Length: 302
Image (tube, rainbow, N blue to C red; front, side, top):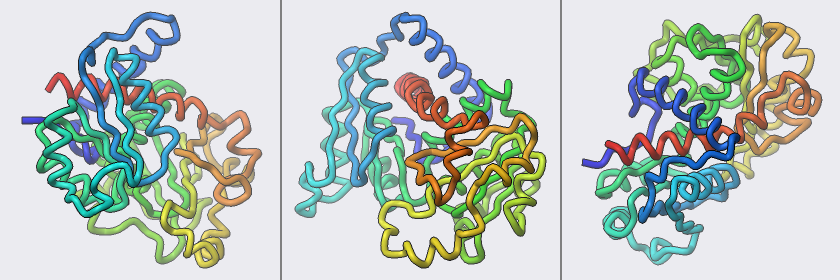
């Protein structure tokens, strides 16, 4: 039976740690111009994206290439789903021809349907509920910069979106202290975090409380794809949530800043922060590639 990765909780804590170590090893090989294991020879990954993408698409396409395989990108409108073919039928057909499917969808149920009807591994490249591939890169970045994930304290400042939810799951699986600060009405969906370990998660009344002494400060765009019509309302609600140099001054002296990108300077983050010495954003972005390679290796070996 194929093993899928739709949520970070699809991996055990020991598997996450092992995957991160493997990603760092694969990254070192790449920087030394050493060939990656050619585990995808004569294998193909299909990228079925309903939403636009930069990092997810490039990282998976490049990962497939570096592992000796091929990638086929299917943009919105490229498949017969635009004419009403079901996700179930699409999954059946694709999995008879390719070896891995990566979805990027607005509704998480679509990713679940792919996994239900696919005979090959399905990866959630992003859904409205979770963004587990990004968390792997974030954890790899923390491992590299801070020397380890265990015992790390993380502040989430901003929207209680799919990234915030996935951070809550990460904190529950690993020895991470997570503090969440969101505007009223924008907390993470309770149904998505109901199984989390709340002994490791603290909801804070304001961003200053959340970032006090933490090792990592994380945010995301206030306007996720498909929420453009909420711009005026959300900008007003999130005005006090901007990650500024002043806010970062409340974190640990050696704290780092993370953002999954794309970033909007002057909104969720000041340019001085994302382009400053505490920013690990560009390392984080590169790590999408190496974490993806380690993930593919794990799923294809199952």
